[in-house]
View 1 (cartoon, rainbow, N blue to C red):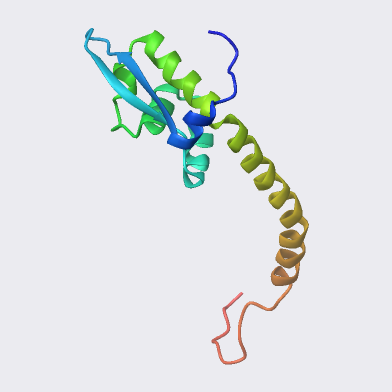
View 2 (cartoon, rainbow, N blue to C red; view 1 turned 180 degrees about the vertical axis):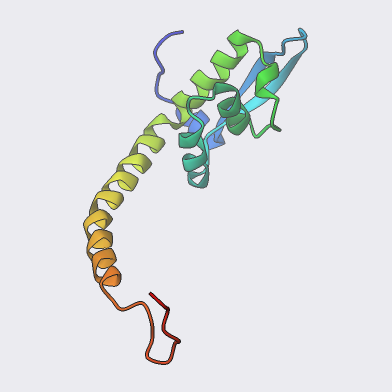
Length: 129
């Protein structure tokens, strides 16, 4: 497959691209490979190495559908989805990473403070040692 190109303005405005795919039984269907809403970026991140699942997410299909795609169709769906979503996803991932780097020392500091607080209240029964 060739290197991904930037999505066209028409694809961006429509939110994706129609693609004809072939299933492993030889049947064909036209699917809409979509630009993912931001809420689907984390699920996409979590399944990036499971290409049939990626195809299902990109095409809003039921579980198992991606396993029935012919290999060339699977590659076409995944490649098209990456081309349509890569730019937005990379910016989201950059924000997510920066946010985690910003929060890590704050969370560690607060965990240390919370961990040093007494665990019982004056009115709670004492726990035997």
